Length: 94
Image 1: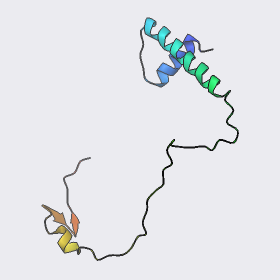
Image 2: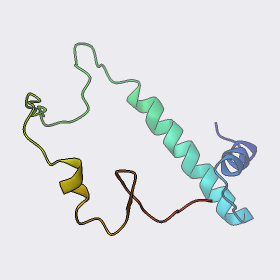
Image 3: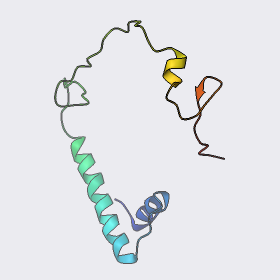
Image 4: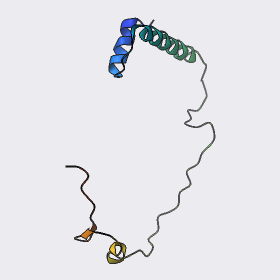
């Protein structure tokens, strides 16, 4: 059973602030979630493979192959600003 004190603790950890009426509703909602999760634990999942998707999904990958590429000079040719062979961008953090 979720108590009001439990709900206050969860709210504090989540950085949520509730008025008294809202906290009562939040407490009931947390209790409902716990009851639902407990009900799920009653299901027989013996022999059921764990899945991350209900639709079979395959990763389509290809072998990495070395191909001709731009030279460093060509890659930097349109750069508005460059320095020591690299793209130079404005500082975003100090």
